[in-house]
Image 1 (cartoon, rainbow, N blue to C red):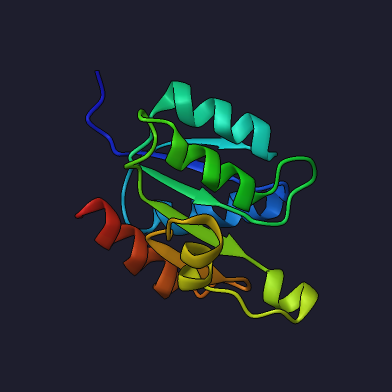
Image 2 (cartoon, helix red, strand yellow):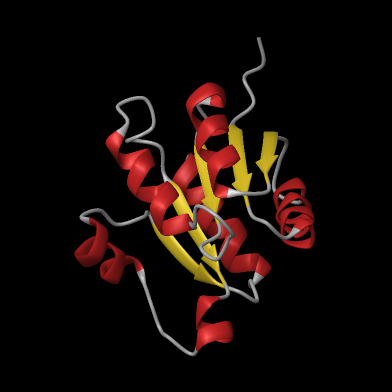
Length: 132
């Protein structure tokens, strides 16, 4: 069995998933899975049991806020660190952060990073959350 850290990327934009994979490959080797919508992401989180989830907010069907809320309800996924990675500020003009999520959803993600993503910020955040 592999001792690689497991990361789940959930984003409806394939370019964003590929960008995250490239940023991750620059800091280490990981067992990475991806999902292109919230429902699939939630299902994969339950079965894959990743060490870290990178979650987009704006997705069709089940958005990232809804996925996050469900992740925190499930015992098997409630303690998995989550990085919210989103372009919501760019597309809507609304500023939102982890503290806002805590107020709205009752739990804060471990990190909240706006798109366009600064690679160094992303890599440092991942390294910190995974303890690498």
